Image (cartoon, rainbow, N blue to C red):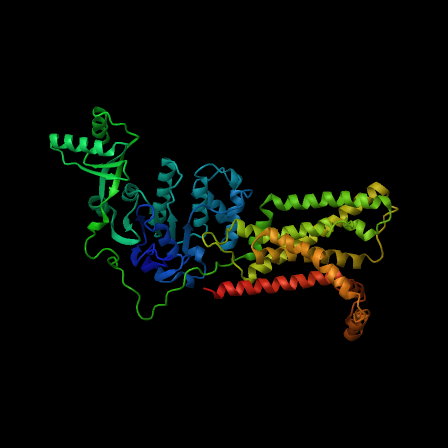
Length: 580
């Protein structure tokens, strides 16, 4: 059962709260509709229930507040607008990524696709989905965790009549299985036809909470809506003919040119307009909710029957706007995120092609050192293409989260937990290592193809070169991840990568030229003496290479940049978590 007590949104400036002291319940095994005109606070109610907007009140999902539910996706499924996903990601890829975030088996993605009628569209990219399919995709995402409660904001928007009927059949099946369904709608006829219980809102306050049959009998009223530039003239004609025919008719004029006729039908009103020569721009039959001013005593915010406020031992209200949870399987989520979009393959392919061309051009004159040729690093570039590509992949790992916030739909924030950061750093490092190895291999193969294998030989210090090369690519990838995470944009991550050679390295070279700089030469051998016979001689060369990388101005600059970005990420994350 879903229970809400005293929900009140935080007002903005001098305006009244969008939701004011709202108490209601949605029982299990039934479909509950939240009905009200546009601007009545329906969406705000859902966001307060999910603690997405600041406010007061208590919400219980089967007796527990949401912040005490270990796996929210298994308790509550939500649809708040469209599913924010990368337009190049496929339907199946999007749902599998969300399944990893929710900690459910990957097979649930295909089951949810079939349940909402998206069969045959699994391979379609989100940016090419037909109208209405995005709403079904949002519902499929809500169903991934097999939740007990469904909270849906106008789920039928943009759907054809047949699709709306199929949607309500799905909601009815969920309720029949013992689940709780609460959805919002502005159409009272739809609520009376498809819901079991109806909660009526007006200006953020409760008007009535009743069964659908009672709602249809006591609060619905048919009317004819007419839009005409001569509303007053048509109103007088309709009233005059109704009196002559002794028919009870009520005519209300709104907004100057809108006429609402209660007690007639479209044929009668249209014939009257024709006889009196009144032009009509719109003529339609509607069903209106009875004026909320007629609220009976005991409604308007009173607890519904069977609802009891929490006792003294109940938990205090949780402030809204809590940070979004990290994915329950962060590493699997990040792997599906990076492999589910074509940009990853495009970046790597572009880097390989550019590096091979640059390596051939640099090796043509014979005056460029072999390490620079293999890295395809001419003097005019601040970084080699592989390092720039690794930094771009790292920047996209957080940049896409902020642009298409699949993890935190409706929250406007991205989880900044340690598990998600470590997963992104690990996957970015693997991608950077793979890119670095591929670039070196492709460049070496291109050089041997163009200039002969006998002229291009593997140097003796290849271990040191390898450590330096892979350290540079991984460091740039991490700088991209942290830069995008701190400044909430992929462009900021790329800027953080470029900041190392453009600003830091020249400064450090000037500092390193001073007489006070000490050398760490011989540290590897001293470590070997300290470790004794267990020390492997091959480690000397790797440690020497790593120390040379760390002592290089570019390596020092990269380490300092990563340290600053990591501290900034930690500080901004702590500040946002404690600000609530």
